Length: 69
Image 1 (cartoon, one colour):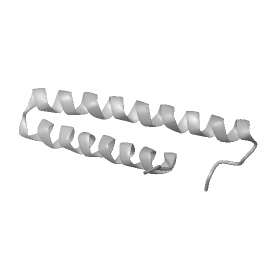
Image 2 (tube, rainbow, N blue to C red):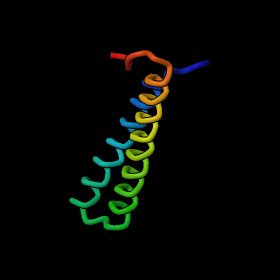
Image 3 (cartoon, one colour):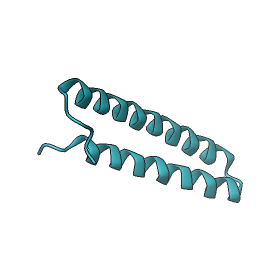
């Protein structure tokens, strides 16, 4: 099955938000290790999402097409 970049990017952004919320909830309850790990995972996933977004925009620009709306 072939997925579009926007679907993958949206899915990764959702995972980053899930880990961010998990980090906040864990911090509220005092689970420092879990909060730090979740925050770090969310940060990594966010930057991977950002890199995929930039690559996708560059590929569309090089092909001469406008970015998808």
